[in-house]
Structures are given as C-alpha cells and as structure tokens.
Image (tube, rainbow, N blue to C red; front, side):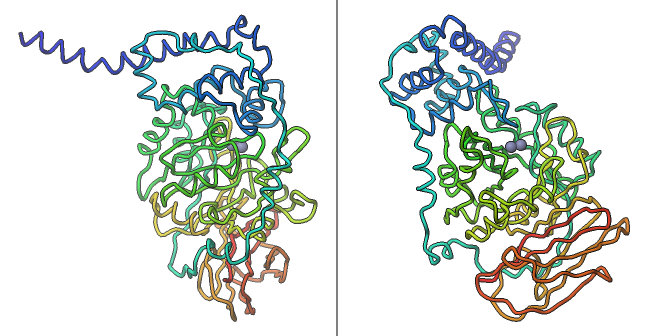
Length: 491
Ligand SMILES: [Zn+2]
Ligand SMILES: [Zn+2]
C-alpha cells in the first residue's frame, strides 16, 4: 500500500517533466513539416509563406513592417553583419506563441494530439499586395514635438553629490542561447573570475530566445542570472537584444517580459512597450550606424535617433564602444547625415543619453576580449545600485580597464541635471598603472569648449551655464586610449 502510494507520488513528480519533453517532441514533429521541401512547392516564395502564416494564425494580413521584418529574418542569403536568420518553422513558433500563451498552446497540443499545422493552408492565395512604405515611417518619425512636450518627459533636477563607489562591467554579451558560444553560466563565470568584472548582463538576441518557447531560454536566463548575482561581489543582470534588421539593435535590460522584432517590429512599438514596463527596466542603443537594410543603409536605424518623449527616461545610453571598436569608430563619426556623431545627435534631439558600451561577445571572450569597460558611479555593488547608476546616467566608458573618470559640477557627478548658473567644474582622471593622461576635452552641446593638458589628476575650472545645455568630457591617455563621461544636463 505504502509502496504503491510512493510509486504514484514519483509518477506525479515526473509527469510535468514527461509532459514538457513530449510537447517539445510533438511540436517539433509537426513544425518540421513546414521546413520540409515538399511544403515549399505551393508557397515557394517567403512572401507568400509569411502572408499565409499570418492569415492562418491571426486571420489577418501582416502589416508592412511585419512582412518586411519576417522577410529579412528569413533571408539566409544575406551576409549582413550580425543579422540573425531564422527558419520558417521558427517564425511559426513565434507567431503561435504570440497568439496563445505557452500554457494554452501546450494544452491544445496535448489535447488534440494532432499536427496543428495540418489545419493550415499554406497554399492559400493572399491577395495581399506588399509594398515598401518605409519612407512613410520616416515621415512619421520626423514628426516634431514641441519643446515643452519634450521637456515634460526629460528627467527632473537631480544633483548626484553622494560619495559613489566605482564598479566596472558592461551590458552586452551573447551566448549559445542565440548566436554566441557557451552558456550564460559560462559567461558570468568568465566575466567574474577571469575578467574580474563587477557586473555583466547577458543579452542574447530576441528572436533566438523567442523561438521554441517550450525550451524556456528566457526563464532559464533569469534563473542563471539570479544564481550568479551576489550583492557586494558580482551583479548579474538578464537582458535581451531587440534585433531589428531595419531599425537597428537595442538592448533591453532587467525586464520581466520578452518581446522581439516580430512582435514589436518598429522602434516606435519598442518605445511604447518600454514605457509600459516597470521602473527597473531600461534600454540602450547598440553599435549605431551598423544597420544595413537593403537600399536604405542605416537611414532608418533608430529613426535616426529622433526623440520619442515618453521613452526618454528609459533610453539611458548609446554605445561608444562595441566589440573591438572604441571611440574612434563610435564617437568620432559623422552620424546619419555626414555631420553630427550619433551620441550628440541623440542628445541634441532631446534624448538624455549617457556613454555606455559593450564587448558584444559572440565567443567565449566575456570581459577578456579587450580592456574596454563601462565604469559606473554607484551606491553599492547590488542590482539596485548598478541599475540605478545606469538609469541616472552615472556611467563612463574607458578603453583602459585600470582607468577612471569623474566629472562633477558643483560637487554633482555626471548624469546630474542642474539649474543654470556659475559652475565649478572638477575633472578627476586616474589610472592605477600610473599611465599619463595627455589631453582632456570639455564639450558643450557636442562642441569642444576647453582643452586641458593635465598637470595633475585633478583639474578644475569655472564656467557659466545656460538652460538647455549639456556638458561631457573626453580624456586621452598617452597610449591613445580614450575615456568618455556621460553628460551633465542644465535644465
Ligand atoms: Zn547587435
Ligand atoms: Zn549583440
């Protein structure tokens, strides 16, 4: 009797495991048909396939953005840098997961025990005439907001005068959960133990984590980050890289929910979604200028950084280093129109954008690819402390892992928002290897207003500030390495 009960309990305990593996199997079997060569005969173009898929699952046509996104993602012939490609079945898995929540879909599959896709008619003719309306989007993006409306959403006055601690890390790295190598465990272990980072966020590509929701990559990436996160020792944060082939790549950090460039196909829809997430969610622009979309090049990327006021709070930074490229590529550039670089374009447009970067590792080089780091001025080495530092733009970028940069006005650290008036500037540059700093430039609204040849680690000056200005600092070392602060804004 007791033994029987025990057996029943054991069976019950194993049931969920058994169920989830058989769901995977069932789903894999029926979705395999989609990629089967015979299936391609009646829908031999990707366009027909995408339209039929949307009509079968949502009973409506895809929007133009959805169609173009899916087309780009299915285009395996493309040799675009860092473009994630997917199979037809991967697309179906995302669309099904979008229509049903995973539990519901699981139940449906188990109950019916049929191949869902056999109900689908991929031979149906759509009558949908796709066209490229992208110029229309650009017009929409050019919508001008009044200065008052932008100001309403800009961050409020804040003088960050606390004595902050300095920590190093970054929030852009990949693993085998998308197109990288290894696992998030490997990433956090190497980042923490070999590179001696204080914090790291693993941010795999949206699409790769979204396909096959039954494999639970999104859930797993959270539990792995939680497992490695130890206050006072190492901060691990989960994120994902929204990877639109049209509008560019944006890392979203610390969100509970996962979206992707199929469910949110425009940068606008991403901004709107961001605005509905919790207080602890934030995002940052990745490798600006790299998008290569058909004849458009990078002209649609991030809507050319035009401001969307309700998202100002959430977009905390833009990369001024990515992978092996530092400020030479990501700050000293001419942006989208051959004039302003990306960082200053964003800030002049009304965003409040800090300096960040990411090694964007796609192999097992987390933190050890090079010495590029993001330095943060934070209250503590905790998730809350690091996230707060990013949200308040108390971040600087350094190409030398031993170096640091502090930039204060009237005792308030970078990221502060101050009233206009006379300000005492204090710039402190340090390097534990005693490397020499050869030049410090102070910028106002993207233009150099003061060049200092430093004679000590601490330089001071006084200047008059006016409403609507922002100031930042770039320091250069004798070996050519750069350090760059986030701005201080004058409101
Ligand atoms: Zn990317
Ligand atoms: Zn990336």
